[in-house]
Image (cartoon, rainbow, N blue to C red):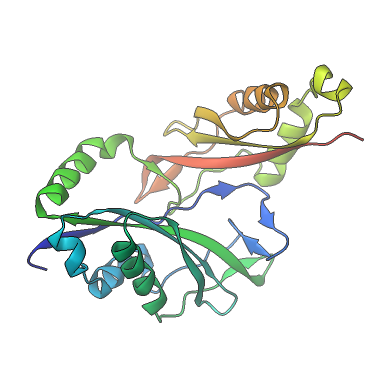
Length: 249
């Protein structure tokens, strides 16, 4: 690679507690997550080996971060790869080609001992020399506060997912104004589990109504301390997204 540097960022997985696409039976997080042969570093290396920076994009100084989402199926193969967020047709096409060219079989994800489909999103950053060097420096400087989406040791709510669901259910107060007006729906709240296990940066990822959104945010902000996530033995910040369903009887 003489004329460019390709930076493969870490796997991105937005975790939705007890979230599943019922229509397609695709999970976002499972008890036993899929594992690429050799781990994430091997995945990054294999992607870097396969990528060929498009000549047209290089000549025109086109660069940027392409997000590719895909599903690791029950056989450990990648399927349904698509561009989640693109930059330019040439870079998007190359990122998609590379993901479809990965032919290694993953260790399948399992839920309750059964192999299931699990969704992933991988960001691939196409950067020309000067910009790549700048981004590497910035990444190093900001590494201390980096937010991970999946880590070796994921954060854990005291008592596990079942205890988290119960805590949320017990803490919710259905807003009276929403009840009177028959307002219901699912509010998605994203937040970060900090290195000390506290909840930070809570915000509405997808709302329904101001009254329901406010209540969902209140509950999440008051969550007790978690067991923090760790990467290579060190506590790190990890992002979660939790869907809270408000349903009238």
